Length: 200
Image (cartoon, rainbow, N blue to C red; front, side, top):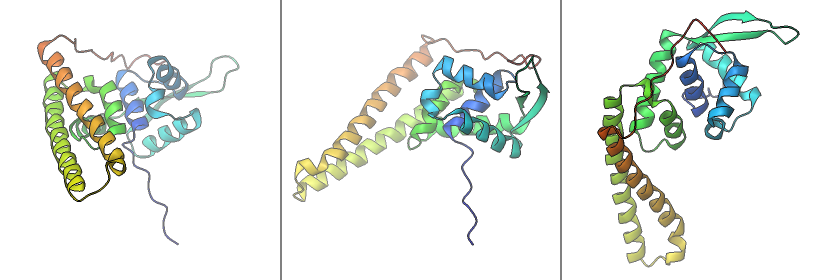
C-alpha cells in the first residue's frame, strides 16, 4: 500500500496563519475572525475545520506551538498558539519564494498580505526579480502563439493562450506600478504589531 502523499505546508492558508501569528499569539477562533475582518478568507477559501487542521499540521511540523489553553465562562477551552523560531524562518522563506516566483499565483496573493515581515528593500528586489520572470513568460507565450498561427491553427483555438497572456501582461504592468510606489515611498511600509504577551 502506497503511503498517502504529504500536503504541502507552504499553502496560502499556512502563510496567512503564520503571518497572523507573526503579529501576536492567537487561538484559531481569533485567527478566523481576523481573516474575515481583513479579507484573508478570500485568499484561502477554507472553512473553520480546515483552519484547525492546518494549525495542527503546522504544530506537528514545529512551526507553531501552544502557548496556553484557557476557558472563558461556558465557552469551549481555546488553545492560544504562537510562532516558533522555525516558523518565523519558514514564513520568511515562503514569502521570499512566493514574491520572487511568477508561477505560484495562490501563494503570491497571500505573500502580498504579509510581505512586511521582510524588509521593504528586500521585497522590492524580490518583486523586481518576479517582474523579469513575468516578462520572460510573456515572451514565451507570444512566441508560442505566433508559431501556432504560422502553423495554421485557427485563432479561436488559441483563445485560452491569449487570455493567459493577457493576465500575465496585466501582472507585469501592475508590478511595474507597485514597485515604483514602494521605491518612492508613496506606499508607506506597514509595521506589524509584535506584542507576544497578549493574545486575542
